[in-house]
Amino acid sequence: MCGRFALYEHPLELAEHFALIGDLDFSPSWNIAPSTRVCSIVADANGYRRLFRMRWGLIPSWAKDRSIGNKLINARGETVAEKPSFRSAFKQSRCIIPASGFYEWRTDQGIKQPWFISLKSGNPIAFAGLWETWHPKEASITVQGAGGVITSCCIITTTANSIMRPIHDRMPVILDREQWDTWLSPNVNQTAKLMPLIRPYDPVLMQVWTVSRELNRVGLRDDAGLIEKVSG
Image (cartoon, one colour):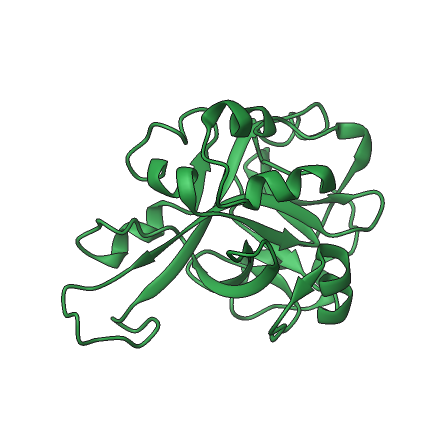
């Protein structure tokens, strides 16, 4: 799974890397948790990539209430095309969720030790994601969040590669640059073209190290010290 990540690139650097246009209003964070608003990249009708802020935890458009989003922070890649919670978004509402790196935990002798995973290149990661817009029953409510209209997203996961396997049996789907247009295209809705993109990332391109258990203090600790290497 993927339950915590970091995004600390400067907005202009992120815009250059992903060829973004439009609003780039976000602050760096080293401790991004579910239910918070995260950056998400979507292609518009002309194919231009734009950055939006979405609630992490997918709320399907048919959901009776938004609480279901708390359980849908990830979508299993093996079933994403068929599972009711995700199949509509998989067909027509795909996104890229950028990250500087992500965290995973391994339990050793009763102690949950967090690890930080990133690309050796130092470039941002492109998570394969899905997004949806949910409307409450009260049609007159149009305010984003707080009981109103909510745009939400989730991260697709797959089986772990060799560098992740000692830590966890799942990992987020990471897209290569040449796959971005296919994934984001509103015209691509064929499972045969999309499913090959859902696979473990090349472990040779990744790096991992242990970090402080202070990471667990969500809302209390959010600084660059969280990604510093510590002894396990």
